[in-house]
Image (cartoon, rainbow, N blue to C red):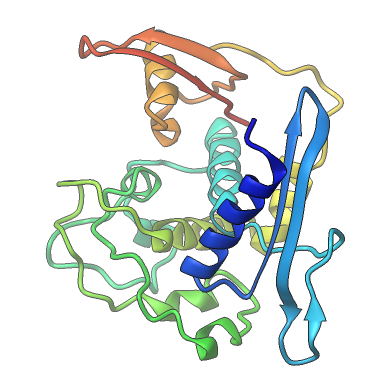
Length: 235
């Protein structure tokens, strides 16, 4: 491992390059903390510095919970991944380029662009539900026809959160807390098809076989002949 001074310089260099407001860094080795660093502000308005106790938003880690929640509903037979999104969220505008399905959203093949209007006003706006937040990108021009190519976009998962809310009839965070974050008393079921294992290795978990759940597994050979050695965990 690099010396602490070098780690500190590297962390602060990233902090400065990204123009972050505040950061907290922690490294563990063999289960033990070996380096930590905090820098910047947790609250600019009140001049509150970042500390080891500062809580940050989890940003795109939210996508993992969204995918897990969607798979829970699919396992229960409450959602069709190949249905157009309007089946669950009728207010979302249809596109002349073609139908956008939930599978396309989950695999970033919808053509919906990644948000670019990331302004302080946007981040200061509170939306009570995921459905309300759709106004941010609902009318954005697609960057590709649905299903034709992979274009990473957080809006895909914002729309999936709205789909989940529409199906379960409650706010997305509450459903995730109840069904995906609270530890289960039941032992995990591990039952995957070979194609499921390849999809997990490709991070294509949204297209898994219905009724399947998995833990960390290894996919060493995919049907397309590409050898892989990938570990993935699917809730």
